[in-house]
Figure (cartoon, rainbow, N blue to C red):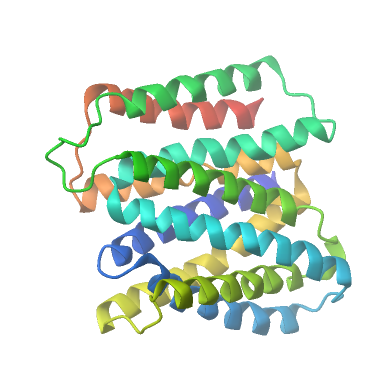
Length: 281
């Protein structure tokens, strides 16, 4: 039960973080937001890792670094999708992929899902079709679900899912050190990407504040994620963490007044239900 609660805390942290990060990415390039949030999270996690103790092993460094590469690619593409597309559609579709990758990995490692979990996977596939229904480039919404946004969403979901799979084997006695190397590797990759794309630069004061908040939320979500993965099966923890769109979509509807079609609304509800079914199964 404790692991389940940690997973839900992680989902809430990621959901709020994604919303704030998406708003910030509509003001400046997505990479500039991450250039602030990732180093912020790295500094906080390093301090906490020293305080918490744990063995700094080669295995912790390896798995943390590999997970960090997936995390960096995932957040870069995700923020780019949020900046160009509707948050209430991008976030749930990403979540389906994030939940699906750990399930597939769990199956490969010997997990056997129940009939309810299999039904949840089927529901998730239907949700993808429904949420994408009727979204065209001619939509009056300036933030449209275009082909580019779709590819960014898919890439982000797969990368995030792989980052969960790759951090799971980190030794349990390593404390928070795997998370330090997650953010260290991710920060390095983001800096290189920003340098090549010409996005190195400091955002304005308001955006900087949002990016710093993202970094703090990122720390909370990652610590809770690691605790959940250490206390539950990969397939179970992964899909519970993937419930984060509940917070992201709720904030998008309440704060941004985003509107979706009837079929898209049904698809989003089905997407969240699918994640829950997989988790309960």
